[in-house]
Amino acid sequence: MGKRIDPANLPEIIGTLYPPPFDKPCRARGRKKLGDAAGLTQFGVNLLRLPSGAWSGQRHWHQEQDEFVYVVSGEVVLVTDAGEEVLKEGECAGFKAGDRNGHHLQNRGQQNVLVLEIGTRTKTDYCEYPDIDLASDKCSGAMYQHKDGTPYPDLKRRGPDDP
Amino acid sequence: MGKRIDPANLPEIIGTLYPPPFDKPCRARGRKKLGDAAGLTQFGVNLLRLPSGAWSGQRHWHQEQDEFVYVVSGEVVLVTDAGEEVLKEGECAGFKAGDRNGHHLQNRGQQNVLVLEIGTRTKTDYCEYPDIDLASDKCSGAMYQHKDGTPYPDLKRRGPDDP
Image (cartoon, rainbow over all chains, first blue to last red):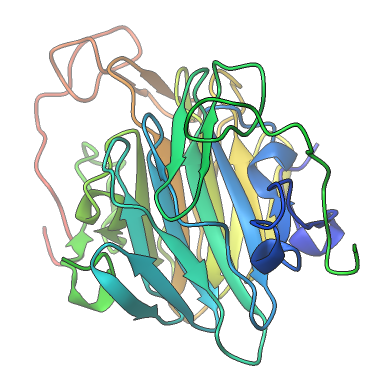
């Protein structure tokens, strides 16, 4: 069997599991899981589509997982502790595991932006969101917690049309 | 300090360390190490440039490292045990660690092709080249071996203009 993957043939997962109100800027984002489609397990590769106004996620950093983003088309604003930078088509950035400098991408333009996201898969991880009361500890029972450890119970995927 | 990486500002490593005659089809290939530029260690991300006629490498598979390729511009021929497939701009393929189905990319067109390559970094790995008498065991003292384990001693980088 051949190995070719055409992302046009893969389902797109739209929306976010973030508890409200943190879901709002991410509801319109779409992801296609390219690495999963190839049967890979050591790292994930997603084709992220950000419509006008959408964010890749809330600003965050991972304790145990390296991350990398590459802009396939369009341009996005990368926000880190250093401030804002524009990443144009063909530009990229990486985020070392354990570097507590949170990052995310915002599409402030009018067109869709496509970004390849790569991240290591690990059994354990702690992900923190420096701007908001949100954390994600893979060793806890729940996907998202307040920073005091209390779980967020209300987890459902919310897309652009959900109330 | 900002995180933006413009590949135009990174050095390109041209050529190959393969022992002759296996170096021939890979001498013109160029790589920019994007993941290293970001300080990542868990996986590598390279921007691979294949001029007309160049191969990404000899056909191979990895025992311990997942691999993924995404065509940024142009089109390439992917060769595996299943035969040949054309990967167009925006298409991709992945190769699971331990899957003994060797793969490589050939640029049979007239234009440069750009490909993002992602591969896990592991302390140990065994890489085998099914079509030729070549293997690479990270636990051995040498970078490349014959399949009987005898090392290839003659390792220097050869580019397009070397004899």
